[in-house]
Image (cartoon, rainbow, N blue to C red):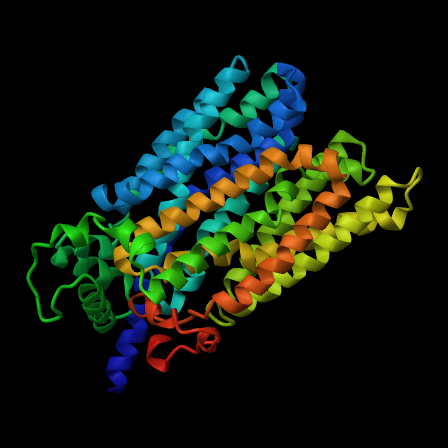
Length: 498
């Protein structure tokens, strides 16, 4: 018995490394969204000067990619059920490559908007499918960490976008912003090629009846052959295949493999558990964006300007600091997801966001009403921005993607996750495209006080609607929902956390 344990521990690093490599490569596709957010924050002012567009045109330009990505995320669920998770990731990279080139060679506002339309489709595909693939290939013990990687790479992309702003801003006005946008085409090619070397999702393979291939993949990404067999049995049961079926290929009824009836089960005849999952999955995506994170990340130069920092280079440096702090914070958070759990981090994160938003809103209001604002108020506003992105990145940033990719049952996962991403991108687009108009209507301080009130409502929603999922197998998570608040503090069974 001891020798067997030792043998499993020797195998564990190899299989874990492969699972980690697959999760990292899939998650890196999220870098393209982060880069676009980061680079547009600094490129916006340059584009406005070069193309001579209005503030309304500018905020539409900045936020419209998120609305366009709705089309990509809506199509990604069915596409991934049809061609597989892996090829959907390749498709996402190819579409974004075309969009980045179009933006880089834009000659006018209409051309640029078309480039953002194409890039938005690619972003929608990547945002939906990367968390799903990662969750489906990861063992339960490390699923939280691995499923949070897409959000980690979004933040890496944001930081790279900020650095790109600082690096290329000194180029001529008609060149700098085009280089900033067009250069994003290069990494998308390498990502698309790299994904081709990854295995397909074992859960998707089972849904296609390809049990032999699924078993081989699970043996490569599990910590032991026993765990691989246990995961395969769970997936077969969820797909309606007898556990004792050991055929290499089986025929799956269309209702199990093609997504037929999924929307009906989600919206028309949901069970109490599915209804609870749907509300939690959509709600957590809604509040992630409605609490104003994209306003801070995308418009940070304008926020720092309103706070009293006028130098263009200093504003860009401050945005780089925002990106650095955000990236470091989320890297720290990923190591606590499978130790502390999802629910405590969500509540702690949103609590910090409430406080920092209210402080930022108050500080900016004081500055707005002062002819010569005190230095300590300016410092307070800057610190509030830093602490806000820290609070967001320590919980709400990574956990949303982890949580939603976990909670939907296998038969509903692709479309359910697609719906969540759609709500996320819609709210992101609304927030991004209304921020300038909003702060002109109610002042910039009033805008952040409003976001703070939304964050209070979000905290209450999470407290009552989001049970703990840490350590629970994907096939068993549905049992945690639809049972009222008594189940929100679920403790995973010992067998599930190993």
